[in-house]
Image 1 (cartoon, rainbow, N blue to C red):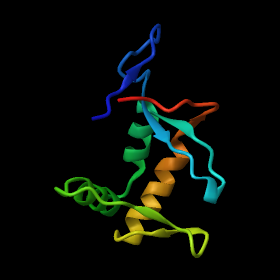
Image 2 (cartoon, one colour; image 1 turned 180 degrees about the horizontal axis):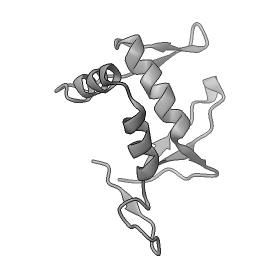
Image 3 (cartoon, rainbow, N blue to C red; image 1 turned 90 degrees about the vertical axis):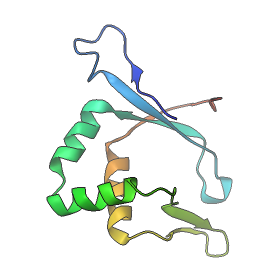
Image 4 (spheres, rainbow, N blue to C red; image 1 turned 30 degrees about the vertical axis):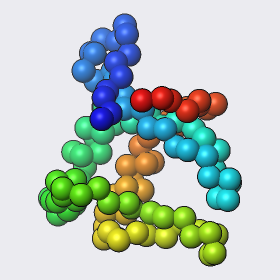
Length: 111
């Protein structure tokens, strides 16, 4: 399970934290291994900007008992495609990804 990483010395330790997300290398798609940081304040802003329908859709997806892949790499077509989830969930995932900050030269983390 992931946990928030606190930034020491911040004025508000609750908001000065991030969730590290390691993205593995996928050479076929020209993606190098890297880390994304989802800052708590950015997530709070993202959630506050959602419409009631978007919030309901996201909550329904997150509260399912089974983990679902959002996108999958299709080597034969050389592209990512939507997995077995709704298009609205994929659009929300793209919006959330744009709020993340990329960390250069990330090393794989052991959990």
